[in-house]
Image (cartoon, rainbow, N blue to C red; front, top):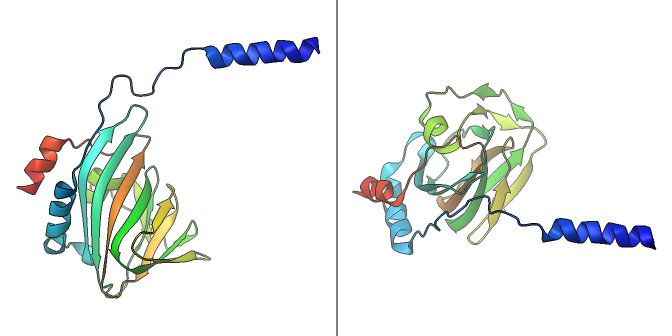
Length: 191
């Protein structure tokens, strides 16, 4: 009984210690729907390789990590789509509209490192690799309202997009490999 009481006292003392926030005196970041819609509206005109427009809206330091908010537009999948894998950055997709088939998994076929000079590596998701397919992957049919979490190191591969898909992207970057982007930079980007 005395031993249990001692353990309880020590546990209470540890819980009562002052904890400190991981982001001391940081500010919240607000992104209004009007701004997100402005990025989404210009997305089809900003299509780059593989019929994708991936635009970073904000990249925020939250203390122990960066959190990046972006919008992605992918049009009809034409031809082969590469598998993507990011070593340090995890991604969360919230599907806004459209639909697609996405395959995920760690066993990437013909994996090749992206060069450090690659714009996606430098600006969006840090070091990683591309591949040609995923062995024994899990297939998801993405539709509006769905959310998928893709941890760092997991390959992700769009294998079908009938018309288009648009999604809000949240990137979690605990190693802070992505550059910060504040509201002023986002507004300048939209001009």
